[in-house]
Image (cartoon, rainbow, N blue to C red):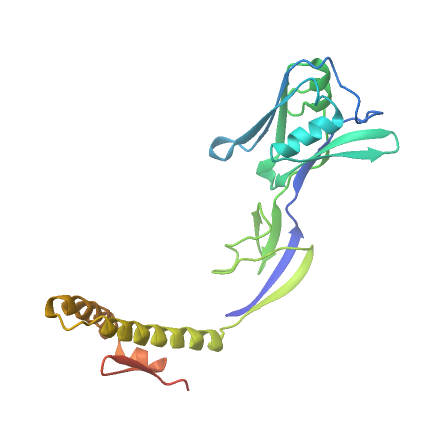
Length: 243
């Protein structure tokens, strides 16, 4: 419980890449030779990649964008003053910066390649970045918009740049509801076990042992601590003092 100052300095965002513009989104690019396009992100255990095939029939801007979407990528064709371009958006976080390699048609390589050593190809419109915030004057970064270690047991959802206060307080009504549910569940279970008795001593022993084991769990608790939250025992049942 308490008041915390949160200053959001930067929101997480995904990388956005765009190709150079072409006059026609439906015109074939290159020779139509089968070409593999691999989009990679991350490194080590966090590395991931998507590979798609572009060939005769989908070697247009629209066809490439559709193939990327079918592979789970956020791609579309955008129209500008000088023509059409392919736009590709990555996932938020600095670790999700993209690398694109192209094996096959040289024209598609010149259009789509991006990353170390790539000549031409896609251009970066927005960089991949982590969220950054100061909590009570202490800084930290987080790839998604929800840093969960800045305040113990709290997950913050960052939605805008700026400073705000986060007030944490206990919720007595929620605690009371949980205590009430515990008492009701214990008593309902006890009644259900009693209803299983059939008069056969061997069969009736098992529900009795279950009740005994559950009762031992509560017997091991401090009676004063239970009384402090309104719980007392009475002939195999729990009694709740709501006040």
